[in-house]
Amino acid sequence: MSRSISALAVTLLLGTFIVPAHAASTEADYKAAYAAAESANAEANKLRNQWTTAVSALAAAKKAAEEGDFDKATAEAKKSEQLSKAAIFQTNEQKENWKLIEIR
Image 1 (cartoon, rainbow, N blue to C red):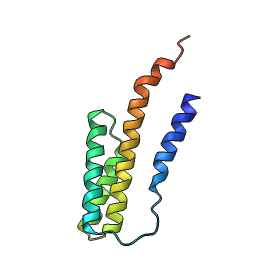
Image 2: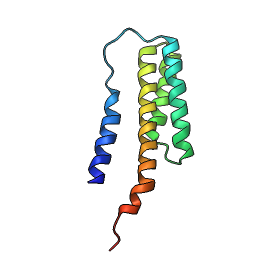
Image 3: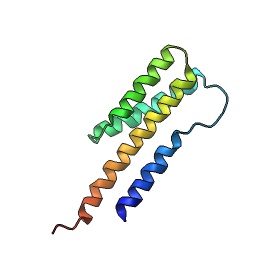
């Protein structure tokens, strides 16, 4: 039961990658999203559960920003942040859930 709840929580968290149609992102939007992603990524790293997909998305965000594509850069930064938050959630959840496992 706990595993299915965990899977659902991660699915809902990762489901936020769908970006609704909106006005074009600015450099300021990118910088804010990148800062949030860096912070979440650092926290995941501190917990020793930094996902490579989050690191790759952060690198893609930086590259897109260097090319002037702030829509893509902002989307990639937000993706990185969500992946890092999922890694943090996973770590915190597993800290407690291992106690629920019945050893036979």
